[in-house]
Image (cartoon, rainbow, N blue to C red; front, side, top):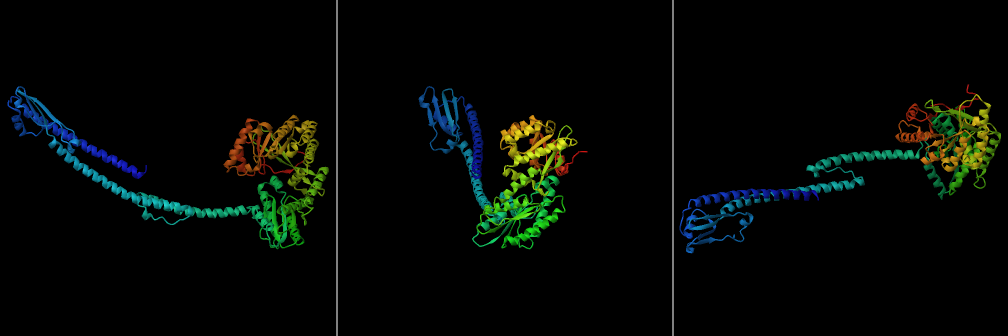
Length: 633
């Protein structure tokens, strides 16, 4: 029920109760006046107790003082003296008698007869009815005036509400005309003020939103580290080439900063960002005279640029210039390789997938050739596998030559009762002694099915290192491929070789990626059990990037989980990461698994993680990786 009908109903009830109250008061007053009239009559008649005569004479005598509705005198012995006047029944259509109910009756016994009368109520009722009529008239008039006034006010109110509704309906259309507060009076005035205030604030907020949206759009299309455009812009530009009907040609150059993961591990994330920024500077300097005005960062470690309207031979000048800048940068840092480049030609309506595959192949060939090398592939047919073949030969050669060396990085225990270890980072080099990008070596070994042989070489080299250098104390963690650990042949070989080196195998912790282990929980559990039989331990690294579950904890039961470094970054300010780490620490403690936080690069991160009761800390702030010594002394 609306406000208007509710008010009318309440008003009707109030005035109805008021009328009833007036009627009740008048009725009581009438009854009182009736009682007075009856008492007066009774007192008068009682003075005539000795009266004798006929009924008519008695009627005439009493009529001088009183008015009767009904009069009846019955003589005891002489019926001729009887007399009757009026009737006990009231006259029909008398509205006053209908409203007020009163009977003024009296019976008197004389010496010779019996008198029964009913006094007339007209005088008593008339006065009360007149008063009631006046009060009812005033009440009804007041009720009508109030209802008319209310109807007028409600009409004005509805007009104001309709204006408010129309104004609100126009807000989604971003119509921000000023509110006409003169149309919103009385109780609606505060709404008008609030609407006007909201209009101003909403207009300001939308203005700020557009500014922030512009910034977000810029951020979505621009890499904050290098200032290059993002992969999305690269895809858009590539699409304009592949879908274009206009004649156009040029070269696509891909630059891979393959040392990014190594620099992040050895020197920390800030050094990694600086490394990418310096490479971006080298690319800009090399392309300064080519007319390129947009560069792309297409992945975490890959850059790209299109040089239009030149041939591959002309584009080689850019590669030569880029290598010179990269070599100069390499002299200022502790690494001999910065990035590798590949160049391929393009033309309108070319196949984008084939173009990118050819460019990736060119980069792969450059990576096997030496530090900061580049390679050019001009043809789209028959050359796509050339880069893979180079990698296959290179990986086979480094396995046979055992082209590996180790860096070490210690893990800091958070209390003296926790037994931690030092992680060994494998670094590979070619026959010329130049470092090969570790991530590419591991990825290409898995692509060619050489990961088992590569992991065997890492295990054998680790055993030789520890056995030949008894002064190296403590436990050591080594990284092997999860795909190798899930193969029964490799697990059997690993179990056999560790069984023959029991004392050394007890010092080894095998680190495997969570994503690879979760591909086959049963095989992962079997690997952990086999390693436990020979005394070795297992750690799951980059934990938290995959779809972790309690089932994985319960069935695989690794000895250690190493949280991905993304959870340590600014954890002192990130409540979501805090919640995740607390949950993992709580679950791990219940089932006896140690939790190590990686990528710790700031004091605030270290202090926060220690308060969260992790078992160990690893990162650039704790200790920097260094070439492993032959002794701990």
